[in-house]
Image (cartoon, rainbow, N blue to C red; front, side):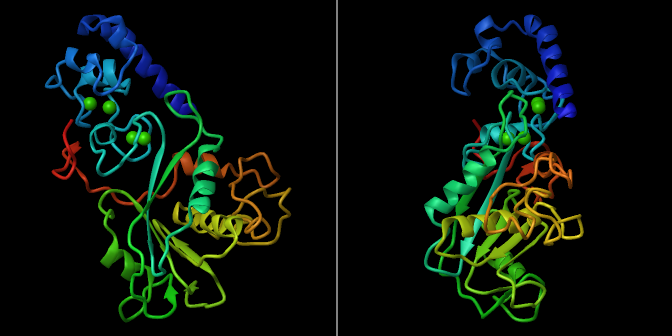
Length: 303
Ligand SMILES: [Ca+2]
Ligand SMILES: [Ca+2]
Ligand SMILES: [Ca+2]
Ligand SMILES: [Ca+2]
């Protein structure tokens, strides 16, 4: 929180000092859309100090991003990519935390609309702040393949043979792996470390889960396994345990909260870990290969 505030202050200070020299109108300084009149008034070929694919004047007077920080909102996607790569990160906002998840399924259907809606709403309600002054996180669930062939139980660790562990599916079916997306597989039977008793499993950047008729149960299981994919690890106090009541540890990562709630903890319970802040600032992020030399790769449309 402090870091974001400091960055924002520096950005505002820079804008206040430099804007008059850049010759932009007050209207442009107040910000505008990519296609607004402000975009035509600035030199898009001017210096790009932070190498994020956006020239300094564009950052200052059009997008209100930090010309000295390639990733103003710290979500792993460079400012230029968020503004210009609509085909890769649709709906991205350079001033709000965005998380992208590719969802594949071995079943005929992907996660239902009510389940997706519940997940999106839970992230939107996250008690974390963004550089634009808003709160919440925008999670983008991108449903891709369905009816993928599967060889029995899907393990969360590698095992011999095709189509029987989550890494097989990511290796063969992920469309967005190089674009910094998490990968989630919906399937009939999941085994954690080979133990068939479990119904879901999450590893850094990747997760697999079963699905239920109940929206709450399915969405809660997603939040739990995806929490693991973001780095909420089982060795931390209370995670994957029943040691604490929900009042003592108010999180879907608590086995007493799993299937009953969707949200992570905010640090005000007796365990005292702010999991939402961790998700916003320090989560495990998938590899991003889309950007080259700070600009969008060929598959990204240049605005
Ligand atoms: Ca820049
Ligand atoms: Ca920047
Ligand atoms: Ca960003
Ligand atoms: Ca963003």
